[in-house]
Image (cartoon, rainbow, N blue to C red; front, side, top):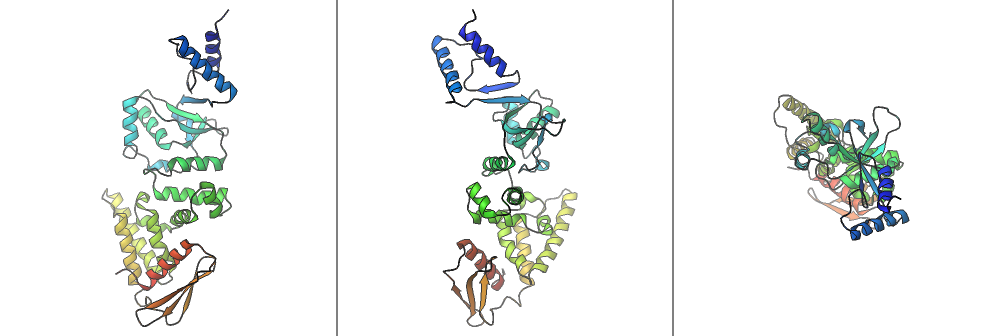
Length: 344
């Protein structure tokens, strides 16, 4: 009669393929003592009872995995420099430490999985296999996820990462708010457990005109705070044409420098140039108003009024009972400050 140990080995061998790695518990290693065997059998019993969740990881060919079409990272921006830390780790360890999260592909015979989280891991393993001809495979964890759940999972994993740029994140949020949340930023903020103001700043970044984006040369230079400072300039009818003309001029210079392999004008300098252009086109209109003016938010709610007091002063009267957020007041105040007192 086969021993209990042998039976359990047979059961697990049938559940875990040669290309799989099963995380806690496992009986695939030979026990070294009765106590160790007892511990492992107890672990298996807890899995059966539902107290422990068993997770099966697989080692696969990265060529059989495609990027999810809504992945929040620009795969075309990945290179040896962007993935240098991960490449170094993979070379040293000879294997991938953390699995990528994937979903099964059913609509394309060329692929078995699509990557929800793990673009850098996929790129790095592919590079080591194809360029350095290393014997390494792609470690994955397969999950069943709806598109909305996949989006939230990818966002949680990448939100604090420094190697994903603000503009990539902004585009991801802009697409998600329309696709999953009916265009309602409030609903999306609740699902992501972030403030509406924080989310709105990234949505504003994604709405910048193409010429302004191109002016930064490389989208990785474009930050959320840039959009915050550029937005009021574009909202001003007197400043906008000047800003757009300057952005187009800078974009052409950046493209030319890139073609020649020269360094690009950095983000702070681009922003300063756009502000100078706005100020140059608005000096006459940047005077105090001649009569009281009401300042509203996007919903049309009056936030405060501006009343002239001499040639160089205005009095601001807040509508404290306005049905608006503090963020609305902050944005409106910054916009009016930039209009009335443009940068030198």
